Length: 330
Image: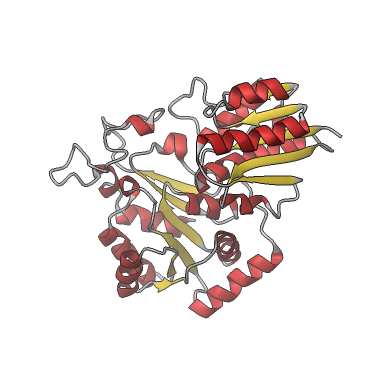
C-alpha cells in the first residue's frame, strides 16, 4: 500500500482549514493509499474523525526544532512515495526531498494577488502531477459527526436560536478586528429582521457588549464543538459572520454560509470559498500587500498610517448595511 504524507505546520487553525482541500485532493487522487497528516496541536483534532486520513501526528509546540524532529520521525519511518508540505521553514523541503520518492515543497511559488491561497496550492499540485486536475477546485470540507451536529442543534435550542447568525468577533489579531460598535449595530439590525445573533467568542468585552445589544452568547466551546454548532446552524439556514480568522474558516468548512469581513488581508487571496460573501474594506488601500501580508506596516501593530487615531481604516470601511444585506442574501 502506498504512503502519502502531508506536512502542514504553519501553526494556525485557519492554516489547517486552508489545507483541507489538499487532504481531499490527495485522498481522492491516490485511492487506497495511506494518508498521514503531520500538523500543529491542538488543531490536529479537526482531522481525528476524518475518513480521508489514516493517521494524524500532532506537533506539540511551534518550535522549529520540534517541528523538524516530528516530521523527521514520521518521514524516516514511513519513507512515503509522495510527501507534500505547506511550510518551507525548519528544513522541511530538504527533509521531504531526502525521504520521499516524490516531494512537493513549494506551494507558495509565484503567487498572484487575486487567486485564493488554497486554490493556488491545488493548482500547483495539479501542475506537478500529484493530484487529478479535476480536483483542483475542491472546497474545504470538514468531517463532522452526527453526534457533534446533534450537540450543536441542542445548544441552539437552549439558546433559542431557530434562525441563527453565528458571530465571530474575535479575529485573533487586532488588525483584523471589525469595530465593536459595528458589531453591536449589526446585532440590533439582525434582531429586527427576525434573526438570532449568537456570539462565539471567549473575549469578555465582546461578549458583554454584544449581549447588551441583544445577542445571545454561546458558552466556551472546544474547537470540534464549534464545528458541530456551525453544521447545526447550516441545517437551520444559519449564516456565520467574521473577519479573516480560523473559526470562520472552520464554520465554512462545516457547511455554514459565511460573510467574510476583510481589511488588511485581501479578500481576493484569503477570501472564503463556498456559499459566501466576502466584503473588502478600503479596496484601494495603498498599504495592503496581498502576497506579503506580514510585511505590511500595520500587520503586527494594528497601527494604521491612514487614520489620526491609527485604528485600521480598512476594517472601519466595512459598512454595517453591507454586512446585514449579505447575511440576508445568504
